[in-house]
Image (cartoon, rainbow, N blue to C red; front, side):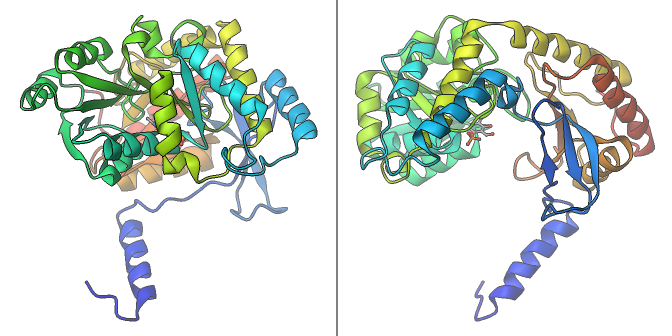
Length: 413
Ligand SMILES: Cc1ncc(COP(=O)(O)O)c(C=O)c1O
């Protein structure tokens, strides 16, 4: 298609299409106030936030899984570090932006995963994209085997590397092995996968992947973004919970979900970390995270390594809410983990459902649409935190029970 000079017509048509399909994303202006979790103030008149009306709503879709973004020790560390170091890092890691706290955070990450070294990035997205891009583009004749439900950041890194890739059916070890078999044993290979899949909440068969990687001489790259802080002793992730973190070559994680801050990382051998550090544009050519942020990340990890209390409360809540949602007959997608996805299967209905929840019930859930999930798989993705009480969860179940019937939504299979 040629745009000629009419760029605006093109932009407008594209936006109109996604609006018509119910896929247009509306950001809800919220203020998550410290000490008030799981509530947030919703500015009902929209952005920019000024003096308009506000309504207090219960948030049921945050990835701040443990509520660590408001933990008093994390806040104190953050404030103190900002007072000492200021708000910006001053440069890239190579040129003036390498603070002592960055180095300490990398040591903490390595220690958490029992690896030799760690490397931090500005986000989990960048950690995945930059690492997979670098490995795929630099290792001669490399071939990457990628789970079909891998996160967009992994897919983009792999794609951009322009190396050969084979997408295997989600969690399907027979398909993975069939694909591995076609390649010479001595050809460099990477298997890239996720431990806890974000939109279905299901787990990867990590041990099985490791066995295949050994058999076919492949490196393993595991995204633990939705698992760190949540699973395993001290929150070291799902591979650690299964006792097989040593057998994974590269563990990727972030600080934004279980740890409630921001930033991403990889943990691996000294050599792999040195390699990525030396060749990844997404690491080299960008300003490092603010030292106060790095200090807050480290404190949050430390809190979670010292106590299981938040994890225990989280899982007690997950178990209660899953049981109640199941009893209510909503089409919950069952999994072994802490994410509670509920299939709606229609973009417009998903949006209507979320609008009614927000306006009439004071419950904030965001519709999840294509391209985050395939069309027809639209859903709400419920996350509960240790701060949610039984009353909060009962309110959600009550509202969903009514709306499921009012909107004539599919029942659980
Ligand atoms: C599986 C997975 N990996 C990576 C990321 C990116 O992490 P970040 O939000 O830190 O960029 C996400 C984000 O939701 C994710 O779901």
